[in-house]
Length: 487
Ligand code: NAD
Image (tube, rainbow, N blue to C red):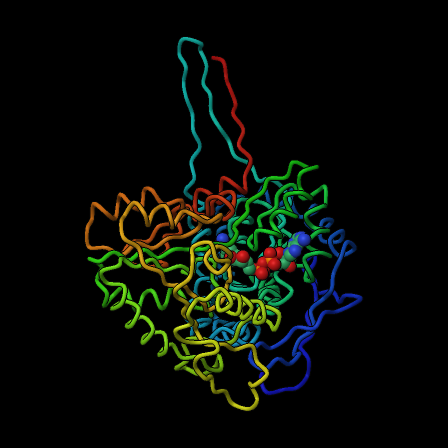
């Protein structure tokens, strides 16, 4: 793929076969702003074909033993791992992220998603209760739901898509997946491995295209009883409306406006580099990224000085540069949206300490039209500002001071989202107190983004509904039934 000017043409994958589409969408290389790939612009017709294939594959796949399905998942993990370098190159080119990030995080985690669910799906148990005085034994059983609709975003393309496909098929469902139209390439590369891994035709169908067209066709299809969605809150609202007439099972993993709370007894040598990472990893395009940093007043000035110094060292460069900390943002429209927040902050009288409009970014001539921007730190900003309330989803973070524990908990909770929070302190009692009071599905203390896949992942409030993880994903992708036997 690299080095050629030929456009990469993707095809849908339905019933174990690659199928062309009537029309295509341009897909851009974010590091150059050039079109380099054509993505099928699918719609109802393709969803109809995928539903037919998924329906036909369901009886046999759902009646395989968990062990048989687990073997298929493990083979797929092995094949992905063998293609790790090609997938990493493709993910970095398609998304704009650094090659290092794709190589060390996105693709290894995609491999791990299949291995993890191949193993965890073998260890679920169900419940039973004996009620002697009624002479009854009650027990539960779980069965796959049917055809699962899986819709994923552009920030961690293969990582988040496989985090859905793996538990869905491990539990015996068949799936129709729709990756983001902005980042479809690695999903298409995954399709090439499915037959080889022994995934029967129709078990995994991948249909490409836009949200309003093919996404809505999937969500509105009466034979798709379950939708697992990761993306933005406004899209979730639309999906909820479209699903309502069918009473679909919904899992919604949405955005965040994540606080980092830094107390005066924090270890700043650890906290500062970690907060730079939590703010700017993947261009700040991770739902778990920090975007509001609350620092206790007594250390505010010292923190700010050192934080800005460290941010200036967070190198923005072309994605293939091994020394790059950050690559390009996903699209021109997104870059403009992120910049518009900085303009609004300036108009409100906030200060930009480094980054956009303050420092100069230098790029090779070929990348001048790419969607790059510098990591930006904003201060002197009010909690009510849109930069402190809305998800920017870019390399922008706001730093503000606070006085007391009670005050910072109230302010950290004062947003509509509740996904991930970070607390830095040397006081173990305080850590537990604050963690328990934060309205957040995840709280990291003295660290960031250490994930335990067994445990529930997901958000409160506008950050979503439902949780993903070993047991949570299994529960979501199965229906539970209670059976009573009178003896
Ligand atoms: P998005 O909502 O624009 O799109 C997500 C997916 O939904 C894409 O595949 C898109 O094509 C599809 N879509 C869009 N409109 C649709 C519609 N009307 N019907 C059906 N599908 C539709 O989100 P995005 O911009 O791709 O991703 C960024 C968002 O995702 C951010 O808000 C981020 O916080 C969130 N996110 C959340 C998590 C999490 O685990 N909580 C993880 C990653 C990203």
